[in-house]
Length: 439
Ligand SMILES: [Zn+2]
Image 1 (cartoon, rainbow, N blue to C red):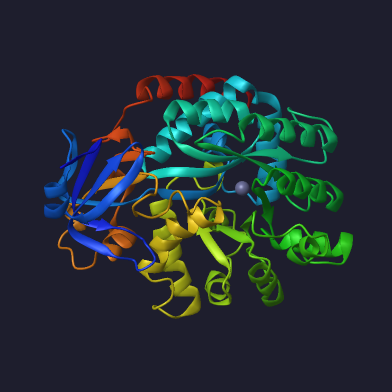
Image 2: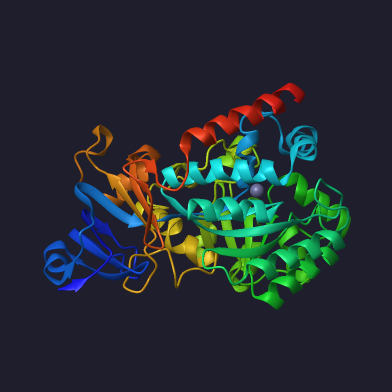
């Protein structure tokens, strides 16, 4: 018998490996943060020993869900200025609130609430794009999660910097400070081609290339953006980025709602990742990204929640369920974005677009134990004929019971082990009181 740190037993081990194997009555042995064996439960129990057994009857275990695009501290603006167009919402509500309230403390407290919300929804890794990256990293480390944290870059002044030079210098410092961390991956995040000049974007790309870190941006989110860039530069957003050599393997473009057929080919050729944020796009009436076309062209597409202020939750199960339904409706084809494909996008493709596929996104020997255990004894989850269908079309965040990142149990039977839930709610309410008075 080989000693290991813990063993997870479940009715279904949904591996999301290359073959999309599902092990019924399966088990996973975990040691030193990594998966050391995946097999039938009787074989694992015969070969491995641990005094800590998680999971059990009527559970499913699958890889931690990946949220590829969010602005985690915006949970504190959840429900602020809803039901408005993107531009009005940003310029008249969100940016003024950010200018008034953003600080290290605000961002740290808000990011901690976001970590709690995501852990409880089975998200083990997220890609963030905001300011005060150190404050976000502080909460991520406290929670024990994994995150790609993009330092925001703009061409105009905000609460954090005045000029592109200043934003880029801050981003570089943040990258240098965090690039050796085991769970936090620093990144550079120029906001978009309508808020950053091609020159600023090229300098951000240089940082990404120099330090081999991701570059995240918003791209082709609204029809307004397409018209605006055509007016300014005579090019559509994705074309413009391609002209300037901004796109590539380490680039993750959020939205791409208004990608033309030619632009979809550019995304595929350059191996640029796309974060599909369907609930945010629906709520802001930005449109629906041509994801089915993107997937058939070979574009790497994964799911993102976007910020909670435009969604209004951080729940990848919800994104998956919405996307899998909406793309069927708009294409008139119920076979597109099937349950296996949707769960692949939420796990292995998510890890892939973040450059983390050798670490996370699937349950395989040698990968990090970033895992979700969910309960199947629920009225909406019985009977069960197809585990993928159940997860994609019927499972809710509240069915998630236990979450591990790097072999560490961060949520056990619905309760966080690293975060103080009551304190997080109390801080959120006290900040909201101040924000509400000034709204
Ligand atoms: Zn966004």
